[in-house]
Length: 74
View (cartoon, helix red, strand yellow):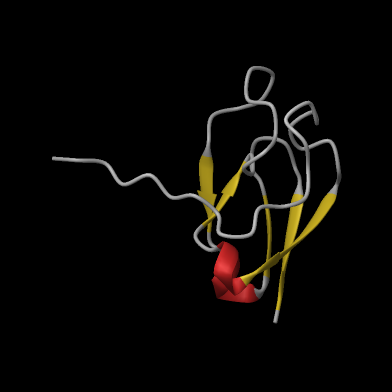
């Protein structure tokens, strides 16, 4: 079985030295789905494990690890 690795087509504009989940709210678009936290471009050495978040269900979701809020913009 091969695992699929998803890369965001339009990653949140952060640099590789941005601390993971340092902002409290992130706006994402449909082309960024499936949504995961931490997002692409965030440092991973100081963050929690990647978790996929179901933002499609209600249009907003909070990460259970770090509390970062994600809002789905149309």
